[in-house]
Length: 196
Image (cartoon, rainbow, N blue to C red; front, side, top):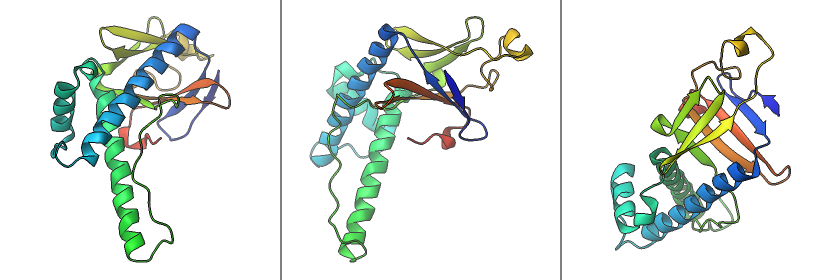
């Protein structure tokens, strides 16, 4: 496992995870892709689109598609927030094209393929740190998925602190890197510092 700091208050862990846990994360990723595609479909169809806060859209989507109701709320909100960002970028690019500030016409946001890992963002009540087992735990449906963290070679690790951040882990971004076939986890107490 490699440790690498990206932001002053964040840490990226390059983790080798057992195949059962990795498949579980892929399962959540595929669910996120389906959730993204359903939300995108509604945004493309003005008759179906729900205007309002992310929470209002989330409630509408989960009532329309009950299979998404069991997803962790922080994961769902991140998917919708990312979709909003992509549409903002598209609209900005479209304005730039109309004003002749860019040569090519922008492409509408597309469906997310289930074969591509969807970055998973866990925060709030969907994430906890078990200092006794030194595990980051991710909430999914009725279950908690344990991700064992590395031990530090110092006195802090013997006191049960996490790898470099103590007990301040408030959010985690789970990514899959196809080149290495490894899961990377960015843990961070500051939401604004997490970008995928």
